[in-house]
Amino acid sequence: QVQLVESGGGLVQAGGSLRLSCVVSGSRFSINVMGWYRQAPGKQRELVANINSGRITNYADSVKGRFTISRDNAGNTVYLQMTSLKPEDTAVYYCKAVGYYSGTYYDYWGRGTQVTVSS
Image (cartoon, rainbow, N blue to C red; front, side, top):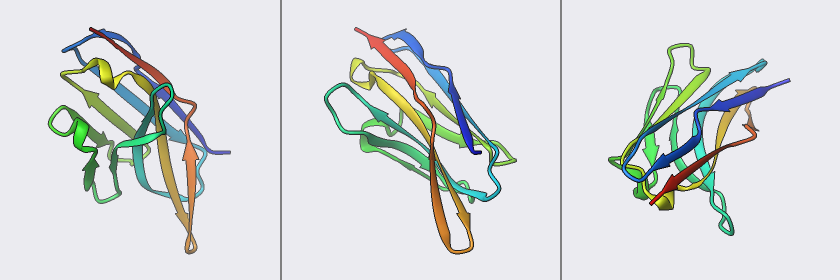
């Protein structure tokens, strides 16, 4: 059974930094893309950043220049370094991993970690 375990959320003042981590375990498939999404109260879940197995990254415009996504050499852990945090970054942050096997992609999600930025 595939599990994604996030950590690193918390409460921080505006302008501060946090680092999120997500570890994938139990996957029998190769993990292609890993990423972070977030969902604020009353809003839809949105992509924050993702990174593929070639370490190519993609960011939402709202976080470019402030957030950095990275992945460990084994490819099973993804990080999100968040700096210059703003109150509008407050949300539940979810980790997502996309596995690939025999022509089919499989989506896996973590349970989320709360990030709260106070003004």
